Image (cartoon, rainbow, N blue to C red; front, side, top):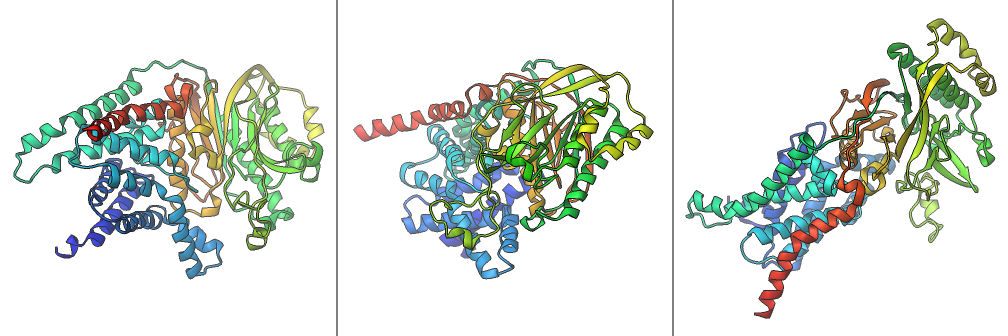
Length: 558
């Protein structure tokens, strides 16, 4: 017990408790009540920093940063270890650097608590602490964005608060729930439990209002009823498309064969299919359209497969490929067949090192240090794209006819000459989000889309927990915008959710080919986040903070 009284030991234990609770509250575990415990650990560590020097504050930050990086997101360390050639020393150095650069949310919160919070936790300081923790969560730069709001993501009611102020409002709720316990235990030990709970009642009342609001959003809020859409997500598990495979003909052939065979299997199994979605990287390094510079990476077979699937089923196909624009290479999401002027989207938020090399323009020598880093350029346009599909067919092709037509799969022009089988064409408005972008609320905000489509590739991380973490975080985008969401990941996890973030069908596994099919009701609801974006979150945090700063002004005048 004497060891636990040591400041550094106690802070390290709070850091470990926090990291373990965040891990267990995320998928695949989903023990969401531990989300409150994780923030409780942060608050308890912050309370011990009062009257401590800056050195101890920085040590506490380091404990939390390293514990979170190693325990909660240990798969990042494993990935660094693989990319650096299995060198343990370099892995350790890069892990420490990552923790210092991308876990600054702890430092921001601890600085606020150390220098501005004084006295016991009460309603004003509880609101201020929760608001600062949530804002620190939102503004801290991160390579893999995670937040305390996602710790409550497995609870279908509390996560609905994201439709008001994004997932970071759920972070605020987690902190406020933890503050209730802080207020209750902060009283002297001899204080009766009844009086302790009485002092916690104001904080509990605010938390109850948030909880009732979340329940009302889930069960009372009216949603606009839409038509039904039959969606097929194809998970090929083609593997990692490393730069060395760019000219590997066998790899490209295998990728096309998997896409075609699995998509065709889905048509035969399920009959009615309105939308076929392929994961990011399912057909690497190739373009499906011979336009301009794209001719050097154009694959007629890839083009033919897309055209064939649409003509035989009436389904729209959404896929990712590479695209040259003014000799700059982009990652592109496209819907075929075209429906209007806006049918493609160029990825706007790229993954550092994986898709581009930071500071390369300022320090060209960095390319020699990281020769395998990506060379993609950032797209500038935002918004939605449109796709056209046929909800009915004049006749559905037989199995024998489908198989007989495979001889045409290297000739797009011959497939385009086939008679169209579809009638009753429908237009679908899609909010495109490519892989990493789905971790950022602002990248997925939409007021007009019928469906959010996220194409992803987590193949680089193997079959570990990263795919579960990534998928778990992306479902909050459906909640924030009140729109159903389809996520097709080339190696898993693929999912289809409704507008409340609930899975319509069980999610796919990892590291194996799978098909995910669901009839999706294109219902949507108007949300405050879709209308105002992150502005709504910051406005609410200002409301929570102003009593604290007003109190500080009054005390300073006295």
